[in-house]
Picture 1 (tube, rainbow, N blue to C red):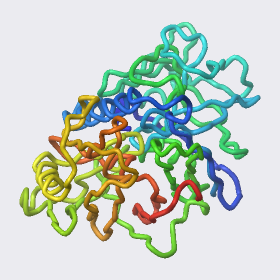
Picture 2: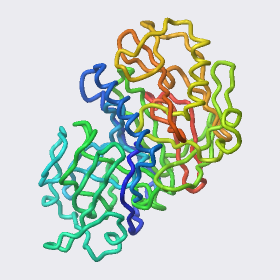
Picture 3: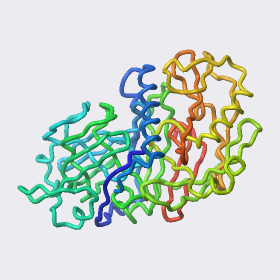
Picture 4: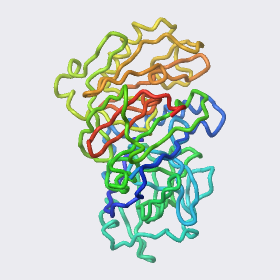
Length: 419
């Protein structure tokens, strides 16, 4: 999710366990309620909000296991448990954010959530961070509660969403694996484009305050996920793996380097071009050598659509139009640019391959087109004015693995409903 946080933290790396790895489920928002076109529209519109906040530089800088992920309106939610005794909740699994935060009592001004609001007073392992700690003083936008002497945080995002509350440490449990002393935000004033299925965000980015970084050597810098298509009607949960469970190997695996850039929250990849059918479109031929620089795209589990630099996008659209024989129509949701009249199960659309540096990722129809109505099939790409975002639709039915020691992202075609 291209939320752009105004926070930077210092912390102690946490040890998870001596186990061989763990896995949790991811749940998509749409599996939490009956399907409707409105949910698709909401997901697509949030994608545009996120992309706009990124390209406009709307930024205020700020061993192994697995878990359950559920889908929710174009985003995937992770089941986590907080505190002692543990209280289960769902939060957005987001490789585009760092700080993990959830809504807490007393909720002064909060968005609606379906699960009970977390009460820190009921947890014996919850501890607020003092104003004098380096964790607090390193924040770009922190303040101090003069009455209690404890640290207050503010997270502000490019789409005008925000979370404000107490900075604290707390135990997080993922599928029976406990992670003590995780730095979290306990939000008391939270508003924005959050669905009721979520209670906050699980930060899986590359920054110092992310859950991934705080797990440290315990997961050996490895995590992966396999996203079940959220509009397929399949109720099976997606999976997120950590440590040894997260190794992506075997036939069909391709890997591309992670490029180190600022801010460190994002995982930057290098897109060299796209092939539509048999027509290859290279980034360098459209923009020259300067535009094909390394790290021109981020991979983001929290953005639905894939955003391409505008010139490349329109070249791709032209190629798609020349090869699709279906009748072109307007998007009934009024969001996407290129849509077709289609009622069939398997529409005739060209194969598209994303050419990352060292990795050709062959996409299927489920990765490139999305239904926005009973009879409408729309191209799941959109134009961006700056570098691209590789969204979660393009990642569905791939095992996507991050190895932060080797600095690679790997893709393996997988039926995620059976993974």
